[in-house]
Length: 314
Figure: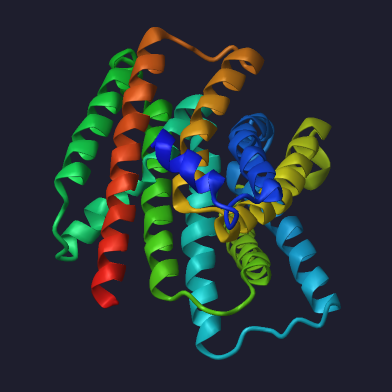
């Protein structure tokens, strides 16, 4: 992997300093959003927090592009945007925000990082063959998760902890389906504008649920710390990081831009231990590294398969 990254950076085409800055920003600050979410849900319902975050962030995107007179989606583009808003934001982001209320932010980030494994499993059930590297990666990642949860076996008997794990797992599955659907329905529509519209649609969905089910609390009762958490999630998590993320995807090769997936959990685990005093044990450290190693193998297998398919088409 090191040689690929060095050769990629050495290429004039890929030697984009701003894109590297964008990658570094995503690597660190997307990891910190788990800490902000953890703090925010301490004082207000998670789905309400996620809905408000997405409403504010999405509205800023939409207003900007309407001001720039960017054309609205047309025809089938709306169907794609609505489906992605449900999969990537209402379900994936909403459930992950809810789940971190019951488990540590670091553990939540590690579980979230395994979503590529679900992509491999989903494609397998769709009839695609699994490469040996992907199978090995699946077993290694699973063994890493087992190491992590070794110290949490008793915690699994706690209903809230178990519920949090289920929510995070469903969140990663939803993100995997969203990623596959994005690739299948890739459109020429402005990705930043699409992102904002998805956020607004998902916020309407989430806030409707919280209001109709009685989960929502009066905004006047929400403490300042939660509003600061929302502000951080909007500015850093929903706007700057997403802009940096899309930019780096456009400018850097996969060998480089995929690094964020391995750095985010490490940032979340370390900051969770520093800020919240979350458990940082040898089992979490070793299990996390094993899981990320297996994840790298799965990711590498997916990218290798794409290159083979592209070569066959040519």
